[in-house]
Length: 71
View 1 (cartoon, rainbow, N blue to C red):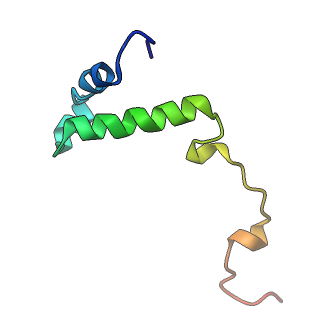
View 2: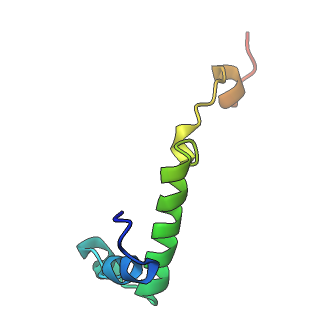
């Protein structure tokens, strides 16, 4: 992000839908852009804020429900 850009300029710039977004449409491209940029700003400030940045340490018996009781 350029520090010279205002929030409104950033939103207007991002509100132009990407081809994938245009294919499904958007009820409010500016609100969508605002939400995307706000989340991006949070992740930029805190690298651990992204959902996939937290690594869980579990064993297989904590993640899988056995289909049959063990022998």
